[in-house]
Image (cartoon, rainbow over all chains, first blue to last red):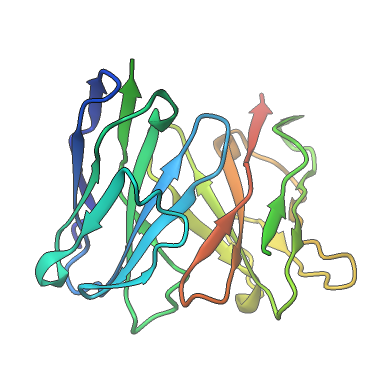
Amino acid sequence: EAGVAQSPRYKIIEKRQSVAFWCNPISGHATLYWYQQILGQGPKLLIQFQNNGVVDDSQLPKDRFSAERLKGVDSTLKIQPAKLEDSAVYLCASSSIRASSYEQYFGPGTRLTVT
Amino acid sequence: AQRVTQPEKLLSVFKGAPVELKCNYSYSGSPELFWYVQYSRQRLQLLLRHISRESIKGFTADLNKGETSFHLKKPFAQEEDSAMYYCALGGTSYGKLTFGQGTILTVHP
């Protein structure tokens, strides 16, 4: 099966600019996750979708971050406006509700640098 | 609150030596623990989960609720084991994982 796809792979922006990341999960996976991984730290969950509904967004900085999963397939994560501390790798993952949902399949990530 | 602690950022061993990557957790409920691994230039992937009680690539991990630990062990390390290893805790939100900071394992020839 094809893996989780993410784009772009790299992005450099200036602070206060906007940026958007795209994720295409594994076909048939109902659950989609966005993680933020700051250098030297483990991934931190930002938001979790079940189909097109939000299950958990408790750690999403909602004043600047937004995410959507229209039609329960692809998802977009947006940052507006970006801050220096948003520099990180943004990981998308998906899982099937038919199997253990803790087995998450990760994409390659998008490395964001905010200058 | 859930927390996962991996006390070693870096761990170096020689090929053939035993290796143990430490993981401690804090969780008030019944924990589900996992080890994820990221090899160089590859994606993060599941290595093993405690409920399976299986050995993957020679690695095992035992959940010790008394010590709140889930250390990853391998009796004879191989060079191809060099990677970043993350311990992760399953939480109250279905499918939600809390990751530790990771340990970079380097196995020298």
